[in-house]
Image 1 (tube, rainbow, N blue to C red):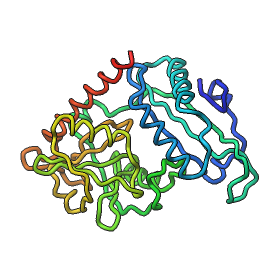
Image 2: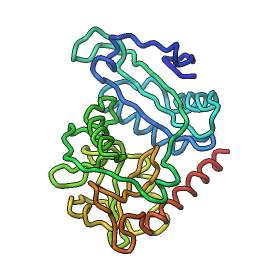
Image 3: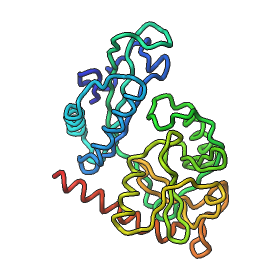
Image 4: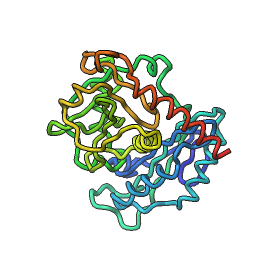
Length: 287
């Protein structure tokens, strides 16, 4: 069952008018919340990011946080599987085609939930391959917009090279990957780019930062050069569906320090364990 504009229905029955601005202009935003054992993971910051994205493009938030939480709880309960990925998007709604905003818009709200697909045990154990590219997207990547053509093209580049992600650089500095944030590790210190308008402010990125701090793992948030990426002891991806996974091959070259070249490193092992424990603790706290 899916949720569309206040109604529950099978996805096959869902209909959106062709003049919806999400269809015409990509004029909308979205969120994706992972669910473990029927308990959402970090729902509050996800809903806060949704509110920021809506505010950034001038779409009125159609629901309060409490209403969103209630709908989220309901859609989780309606599914037959325990671990879920809840996707929802809000567009500016239906209006005659005109680039300018319509007056008094009525947002379109769509939500669906599917089984949560995370990296396989082999990918956690062995890491994944990525490729690199120049980040040529717009400069408001902090808005979680449904206008994802730039990200789609970057993800397709990765797919064409049998890789899971494209790691992007803008003006010689690391930004992010096509649908993930990126961390480096050097001499035991975890580093990530400072959150700005050139990258998505990942909720899982924040979870990793919180876990690093609570576990006394050295951490820096700062600009990261391309050279630092290529010379890192470890590289990681983080996202709501990937959780945290190590990059062990980049543009066909093995990644890592000599002791674990082409394999996940020891700092990743600590973070992977910490993240797994955090998922369990979050579900238990909501039981």
